Image (cartoon, rainbow, N blue to C red):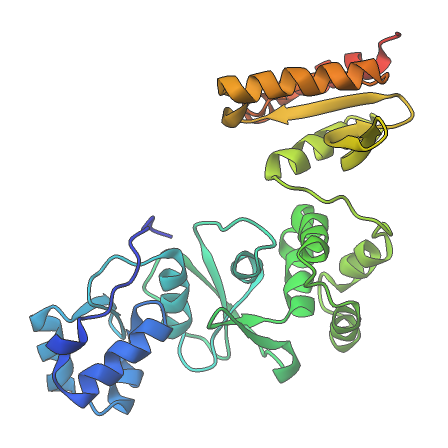
Length: 316
């Protein structure tokens, strides 16, 4: 998906003039600055009128049948809006696009859509899946049509199995996980690729899933578990003194070890001083602290795992 951060700004109402143009501006505002040719026809625009709007710079052609309104710079949501309109009637965001709209997985450059019939899409950043989507598997989130949570997780289980548990955990953290809906989707899609994997993942969910506050924490936890080391409690609370305590990034209560993942904010002088006071207080109460730069997770994960392994094996 082309990077674009400029927010949609509809044409100034006073410059629109006609009722149709005011309706166009209102529709574009609802759809992240995007309209389809069929929607323009529904507003009463002829082919000649559409060409005039293009000539005047009110419309900017994205595909042969989809336009950006006001200016050509679209947000990520705008490109998602383009995708479902380029796919035609009944198209819906799916797979990684659906998880991104829901905030379950980070967005990727390619937008997945499901279309009811074969459709030629001229944009390289759109991946088309031809399938039937039941009404029970359709939702609208933030004004965008997406597959329901259950169907979304089935598709992730089928095509991105390594991301399935992350998507499930994030749904629980964001309090959007609906167990009844997911189990209903599993029953209705018996025999679909991914269903068995999703059923097993749901059955293996912990009663108290980790509450990640950053992707770095999730990555750190996953690296530790993959290395066969003891799994930490993520963002666990540890009481210090009679009335205080701290939330610890990675916490091994039995071993009395705490590993912290430090981002750029921890370079600030006041934050370094606060970290030093915090670590000293924890040490006074028998907790050893080890700090790791977030960059290490990305650029040298083996070093991170090695340091954690050594830290957990240290004797007092």
